[in-house]
Image (cartoon, rainbow over all chains, first blue to last red; front, side, top):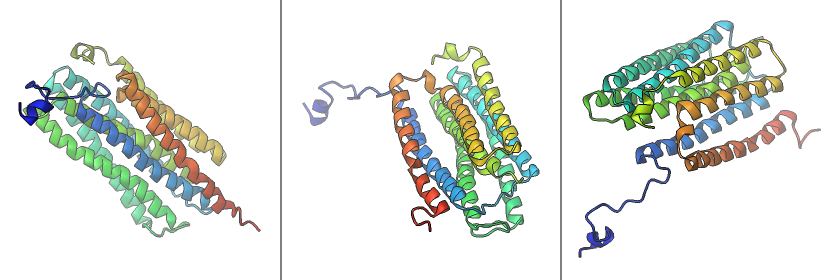
Length: 208
Length: 102
């Protein structure tokens, strides 16, 4: 009996432990990634709160127009989360066409969100906000603002690239419903993080 | 979740979608009422947490997963989120100058 056969218990079936949480390995990996990413975002948001709390002259630059834009972005992101749920449901039900269609609708929502986000950034830059200075108060504001929102935007852009690759791959049969579900997990996570970014970064700094 | 179950209604998901929009709308209303800083922060975080919990349990389907995954996720995440708040004490020290206040 060869070493490999001994390792396999003398049978020709692979020696596999059952999944610890009764989910596919890729999904478990995605959950572990999400848990670690929660730590990253939590560290950024707490650091932002730390600076905000410890700085008496923290700028409050967000006018009603900015808040309205952020609310539109939030509506788009939450709606795209809902369409992603529909994509996952369709994929799990074996409806490949509907799964692809809802994934692409989610992708469109994500692109719109990213464009509005970038527009928001340009608006702030036009007002003189950079990483190290701004016209209103402590220079820490720009660094903190761009770090937190930039990390969110980076995740959105990464997710959009993944949607294109997995979405079209799923349509061609290269990827399965499990892959769409993993995309969905990542997208829902981004939406949830945004639900904390909006109140902490924008609504707490509404200009009075 | 089976394919047959996936073909069921989307009512539950739509309710969560509306709740998420509602929590954001309530946050907006609260922000423009200009309550005190601490009150505003607590209200905002509470509403964000409700929205996030709904998202994790329903949209991310954690509620439908095996109990052990839910426990593992909750323990790891909440422990780190709780301990990371240790930093706030130093934030207040910077603000008030304690323990070096004159």
